[in-house]
Image: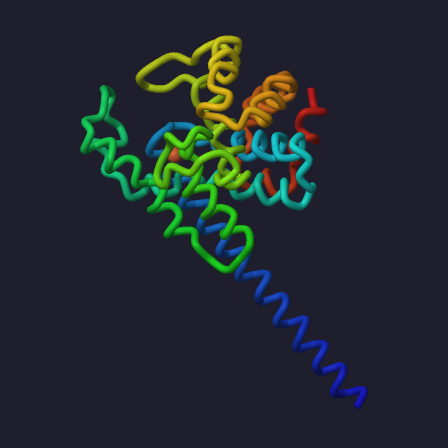
Length: 238
Ligand SMILES: [Fe+2]
């Protein structure tokens, strides 16, 4: 009897290890895809690392658990993985997109969702973020035009931190905007683009988000660092 119990335990442990290795491999492949998608759009790839850390911080400020916020830290960087499916002449077009090009570009949300959909909770969360990070609080976003709290929290969080980080970084077609200017733009978009509660939390603690950005840049952090380094660890490092 003892032998059978021991064999069963070994079998269980082996299965658990195999599942863990598989999930880890799955995660690594998707992170690499996210990096590939990001490198086509931005030549450093560090935007998505900052995004993961800022999303974690905002989730914690909102009162979400450490466990959920950790998952957001890992899942948020995959939000634009669907850009893999967008042709370069649209993704890298310097001027305004035509309505048809805009429609194609907007498809990255649904493409990313399809790529990430899985029964593994981390990828389920990443798929939800990919699908909903362009929804707007007043219902004027895409792809579904969801309104208010019908937009999952993870989508509302990533919409806000993505906006702040993207506008305060240099792009090939424009220079970075000042932090103050972007904070004013976020305040003006409360209730329209952004969840007003999240916007207020963000503005109130903006110095933490700026510290996250500066410390991430100074250390040239990469995806793999997101596994071990939390937003609060990083804010504490000066
Ligand atoms: Fe996007």
